[in-house]
Image (cartoon, rainbow, N blue to C red):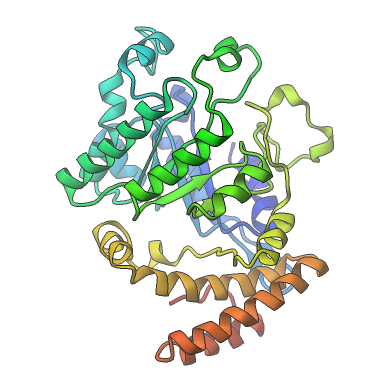
Length: 364
């Protein structure tokens, strides 16, 4: 219900400081395109007061079942960010064995070509992925690269993001704990590196399925997006975490650090956390973003908007210790911007001043 969604969004937006969410929908008739549109409107309407400004979800990415072109057009009208559908496994025989005929997910080709339909419908940021551990990871990685190249050949742009979650043990899912294709840590690191080299323009998403150690190791291999303070159960954000039952979670997370803890760890390691959603709202999507990414020009905007959104988050949400680590890093980032981007630095500095004074949601 809308009121339940509102309660669920208030904590990420106003208590933690997230600026974007991934809304995951099932394949029930009760969560059809009408429900998706209504829920997205509800999420965007939440606005929570913070210490110095306000918290609000600025962009919602959607992970949903494959949809028709008509439904995808309506999804675009609702103002989504990236549309994600994972093939789970590209191996036809394995896919058929795991998705029996006459079940909602049994149509391999309907799922495989959903990104073609999304791009035809005008959704120009799409995300692909596979669930590694269902079949040989080498096969899946090669298939993802070919999927990206097919989208580039057909539409002139590849996936905006790629994801590679590993299969995790789950209740009532014996295959999850007994698959002969489980991916070892060393192979997973190799997988990340191969996909970064093969699809260099795409954002790479490492989730909290992975341990803190693995996420730290993959930082140097080029992942660009991650989650934190993740909750998997229905109603999990609006209820105290201590009272939640493990059987409400889809699987057990590998990294349970809070967003504050993760930001602090990254800052101490020299990495700035960006909460930027500017590209979606100023037209840097689709073919335009692909050109900027492939030329390296998008990095300029990413750097500057990272500084601005990091300033916001530090003032509104950071603990004292995390803010201390962040202040050291942000001064270093400002100094680097002044040297490397002198033509844009005055605008950056003016926006930075206004944000420090309480204004919010400024971007270049």
